[in-house]
Length: 138
Length: 132
Image (cartoon, rainbow over all chains, first blue to last red; front, side, top):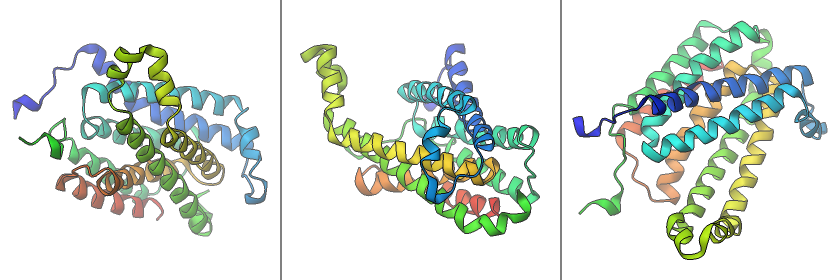
């Protein structure tokens, strides 16, 4: 089993942390921006294009682009099932940002839901970091 | 926002699924495009960096994939304008992961192991609890 473990250099750890935090912070910035823009009406979807000009939304887009770059880099040396649990843990960061900065009221069942998602996705981290492909079997 | 959560519930579900379906279609189309192109390093050795960029940009699958991603992004903004981040973010991210696993198996013939299906069950239960 030890052959499936990766030697993670400090630089790779840094990229994994960016993957973990990036999606959460990016989504938080988008949500903060959309709070300012207000509820978008189904009949006025054009408002979504003007929302892109909001500084918080611009910040969110930039952070999400950084997240995508880190995610792609991480995927070049590890498999999705190794990288994804890192993003799943980001859900906890998102919940904390929602509670403390967007003042959302998070119910007990919502915390339980978030925990189930993190545990469920974390479970796949127990698998090998590279998934086998059918054509690779000798 | 929580007190009228039940009232926005159906609305929230529709926007969540719009985000999920277009993000999944985008992922699958981009993966299919990259697979059809083959190894980018080989293309670069043969026809240089310009050739590699041209090969990527002229792929119709890639264009369609990026279009789906754009729709998914605007649907996410729309969802966030009306519902809590602590509902939308975990629900869209985890459902997209599950839908992409299913899509990869159906369309790209990738092997998805049992472990990932068990994870899917946890995720579904978790998402159901998010809206309570």
